[in-house]
Amino acid sequence: MSERHYRVLCERDGGHWSVDVPALRLHTFGTTLSDAGEMARDAIAAVLDVPIEQVSVELVLQCGEASRLN
Image (cartoon, rainbow, N blue to C red; front, side):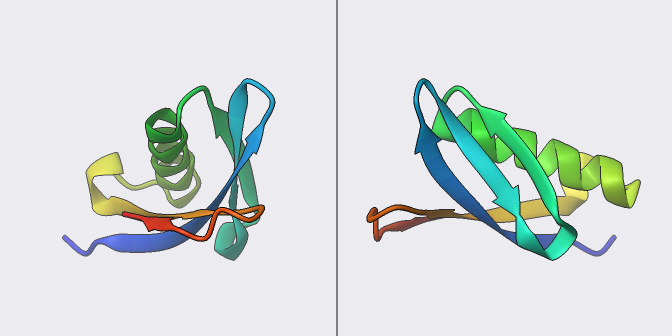
């Protein structure tokens, strides 16, 4: 089983987090940052047709929030 790891760009947008996966040209969202990460994993797994357990993401906050989360 090989893990697929993707960089995910997250930006606060009103009451939710907007999420982009540039490598796959995907966009999704979540109500919390944790939810946004899970939605990104789910979308990536669906596009690649692999189990979600094989997908990991690195959340990168946009718009002046310089911290990176794993």
